[in-house]
Length: 350
Image (cartoon, rainbow, N blue to C red; front, side, top):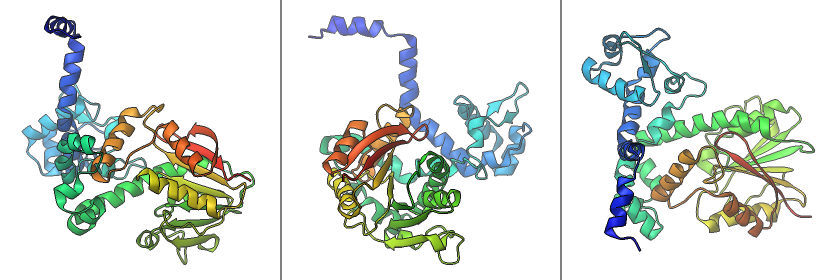
């Protein structure tokens, strides 16, 4: 049993680092807000390779110099921009990721994760933990995606661009990772615009593919896959809901970052593959994990955001394997694709 004296002793034993780290964590909103401000002001875009004064940057981004210096000083504490000895500011590896023209740009991801609705939702995390449900209907009177497209058009645009940039970056990693030995056809289930599928087809000229997603998503598929595109002759675009039916036969099924709903929906999607696929067909499930991952702070934060906005969540290795096996899949190797994605290799039993 903890006594007042033992509690006091524990408190006095705290290292200064622990107290300072907790202070930094509880001020985390300031850090996120500072990144959002930098992205909206486009500081990274106007800063070139040569160090610039705050006054020069202020003119370029239409801001006041004194508060801009305060913003840059805060960001430089986290490695976004750096201050030189003469008081100028220069790029760092991280600040370059806020440039919109960077191949690995995280500008829209940074904006998406700090959209106005997030500041309303995060304070209700304790309610979501108590109930196990999303807080969106209580906050806005409708579910998350209805709100996004009906009432938050600008945020919907940011969401689409964030998802596109994220998919574009992971598509190359996934295309390099996938073993296509014995595979003539691949189906990208819930694959969005089909960026990963397009990259696989570009790298493998003999491969054919199918993209299945909701009708409005299929309508905006990557131009390379649509009529007149260079890959259109090797692709089928199938509108549909993978939780209801997957009317696609393929040698390899890829399901990336969509099994974030309730467990029943995840089981339904996986069972729909087992129901349709030929015996021996391969299934590759690609997900962010909340355990055994070098990106735990990132993935656990996404997990909590999913709880808030849609009542969903990310998986652990064990929970993903369990759902796959319950659906009738034989699970094999589990391997990292990159620093934040893991691939679960499985097949439909013969």
